Length: 285
Ligand code: NAP
Image 1 (cartoon, rainbow, N blue to C red):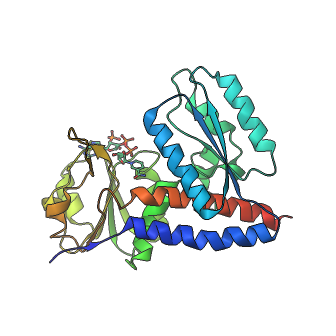
Image 2: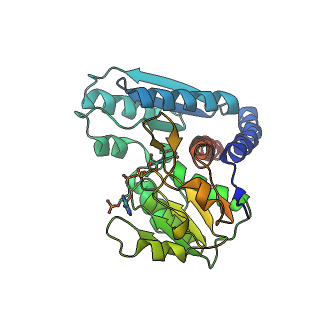
């Protein structure tokens, strides 16, 4: 039997289409949702990400303000720009594209963003809210994973959820979100013993390690939901996940492909956070 293929491109488009109506309502109230996107330097991958984010803003109707700064921008100059954006009432979200050039301290920059505009959800205030179960901005890839699972009507409550990877941007937040949804969560990492056995008990397996085809069919319980976050570029230029898709798709009940699974959800959730921020700001008018 072949698994249901979880189509992240379709869900991402559905979410963006839903946001078009919300943006239109906000515009009727005189609020134009606005995202400031800050890019420092010439990193090719970052330039592509920023281009996709701007395109998504256009699609949804969000105004994007682009700040493309040279590689030699100082930390102080960047902090000054963030402070200006923090103060602007017409800016609802601030996104600083990572990684930053080495001479700039990323933690210091992320900490400078006003948490009420932290649409990437990386500020410690946002992470703290998530960890104590309060509302706030949730980082986009983990939020996108939960949204995908929910939109395919896959129950999380009471399920054994295993997450491989404990990074601050994927593994930890997605583990917290699965716990919030009443899943029973095990987080694995590079020191986990008998990882294959642990994964084989999972009803929902989320893999975020950055190792091509690490998870084989022997990790998967019959009928499990498998979410592959990995994005690995092979020598032949092809993009590939952390899960060996072809063999796992015969054992899993539902599975995300790479590309076209989790990837497209990240930008959709960024748009969602931006609209949410504008709605909060509109409610205080
Ligand atoms: P990361 O910061 O490098 O963290 C990798 C995690 O995997 C670490 O916790 C590490 O364990 C664990 N790990 C590494 N090798 C392992 C092994 N052999 N067995 C068990 N655990 C192992 O990576 P990340 O930023 O979370 O990203 C993970 C992947 O997701 C990457 O391919 C990245 O490109 C992709 N990604 C995709 C999106 C998207 O689709 N939008 C967004 C973000 C990331 P230790 O902590 O013990 O070192």
